[in-house]
Image (cartoon, rainbow over all chains, first blue to last red; front, side, top):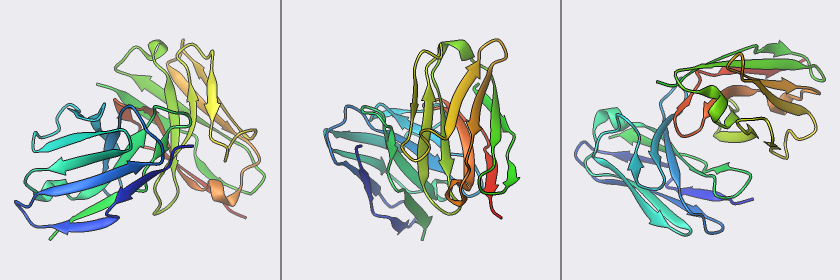
Length: 106
Length: 113
């Protein structure tokens, strides 16, 4: 099973600040997917196939990476971006999620 | 737009059984693999099962293998999760998902004596 390790676990960012969340895989994966979850709601697909934004996701979000290291970046933090973000790999079964990164507004 | 609506959750005793349903709309259900994912209270996401579009293959997480069964009825656009021998550690919100496109709102399963 591929283990995904996200960092940081929690963080706070000010409006306008650049944010980067990292997801490291225990073995190489072909793609990484990201989900956003706000309190009391179900996760939403956010970034798929490493760098493609899901429908409705603002273009201040981007995804990048390859092999065992992937990242989600917000170019300029906005209040609505406060949420928990999870990475997911489905290159190898079973699919596995990272532990999540809780992003708060400072 | 992908819409998924789960039902069937509740409070049950350890050792009991429960069957969850998920009705899909907004896409051609019979063309896609479907997943169940769960989230224990205040914890992260755990993938638990996948079924291919035609039920030809099914995969399970080790934590539920032998106790849970995923199935589907394409004529009813419905996904199922039959859960047997439930344990306290199965307490979680259960989501059905077309992974990259949409998740249901979730259904809570609580296993407690």
